Length: 252
Image (cartoon, rainbow, N blue to C red; front, side, top):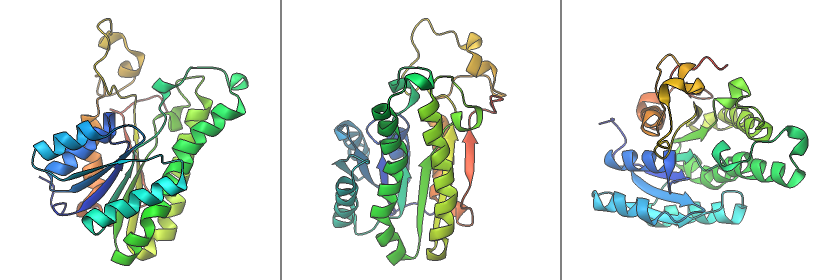
């Protein structure tokens, strides 16, 4: 158990699957009331939380739209009365993109990545900030990526650029909201398998695995512990930081 989380309220964007789902389930086990915000249906995650004895509010949310993120915050407060934690996990990830050299990336694709991966966290923070300011405390955790350090894998320029933006956003935001008792940090996972690898997958031959000090595949559970720490009172004097959770990768 992690001390000081019981009774808190967290919004987890991207909570329908992958790292977002894993974080929501784990926070719920610590006694946190969860608002699941995703453009996808969060019903399965919410059901799993409730079945285990927790509280969950599924919210269909498009983080790239201000009206949607505002409705997300308002619905959370209407149900739970406050917002203590915001996990900005929703985003377009490399696995959802076709690799291509930068000169083949058109403006629409570039703008789509930036809208979700950079504007999304900005709009979510704007939506929850008034409530956190009123409380005099809050925790915001943004999601960057190992690609911020390395520029790899190649041919994902728009994705790597968006994650660099998340790191800059985190550091600048921490300065603005610190006087209100709000901590802002970011986590940069390495390549993470959110579903089981295909049968032909050879872990020992995977170049990403071989680049790590801890030579194994990374899964969502590997990221959850860092999120719990950054969401808990144990990190109350840590802000503006970026923590790489990648098994000690030497890609950067």
